[in-house]
Picture 1 (cartoon, rainbow, N blue to C red):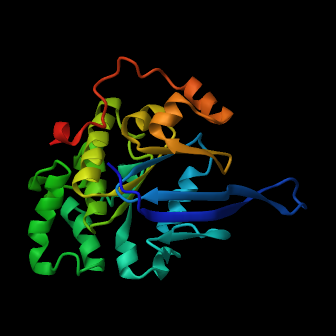
Picture 2 (cartoon, rainbow, N blue to C red; picture 1 turned 180 degrees about the horizontal axis):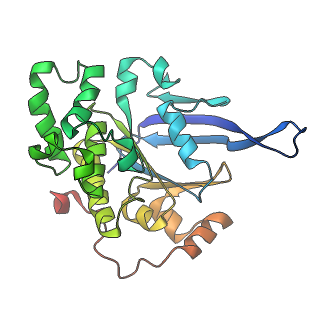
Length: 279
C-alpha cells in the first residue's frame, strides 16, 4: 500500500547537452535530453521510469540527485527545492540516495566494505556517532542480507550480487526516504536480478521508502512497480498504475514497448508479494 502524499515533484524539467558539429566551421548543435518532463513520486511507492536507451530517464535520475544541472524546471523534495548536490543542506543530501547500475565501478576497489559504508557517516556524522558505527555497520549489512564478515573484504573479492547489496547498504546508511535506482539490476545475472529485486521490495516496505526505479526492462517493471512512467526521446508520454499500463496502455509508444517485451506468463513467483509472504 502506498501513500498518496507526494515526496518528490518534478516540474517542466529541461536538460540539454552539446551535440556534434555538422561541419568543422558550423556551431555545435544541442541535444535535448529531457524535454518539459513533469512527474511526481509518492511516499512509500515504487515508481518505475522506463524507456529505450537514450530516452532521458537516467538524466532525470541524475537531476534528482543533483549530479546534472537542468536548464529549466524545478525539482522539489517535500516542498523544498533541490539544487546541485554540493548546494543542498545536509538533511536533503541524506534524504535522497542512489544505487548505480554497475557496482563494480561505483565502489572504490581500494577500500574495504566497512570503510565504504563508514565514509557516509564521516560526511554525515549525526546519522551514526563514532561510538555506534560498529553496530550500525552490522545492522545495515544485515538489512541487505550480508553478514558482518564482509566488512573487512574489498569489492573485488565479492560477487556481482554481493557488490550490489553493498551499494544498497551504502545508500541505506544515511537513512534516506527516497531511493533512486538507475538500472540497478541490468548488470547482474538473471538469477541474481530476482534476489536483488526481492530485496528492494522488502526494503521499500520495511523502511517505508519511496523508490524511483529507472529501467528499460518491462519484465522487471511488471514485477515490482506501483506506477509506471514512460519516456520517449526526452518526453514523458504516459504515466499510469502498473495494472492499467500493462492491461490498457494508452500511448502507441507504450503499446509498442509492451508488444516487444517477452511474455511473462508462466514466469517464476512475482517479486512483488504481499507483506505476509515477504515476512
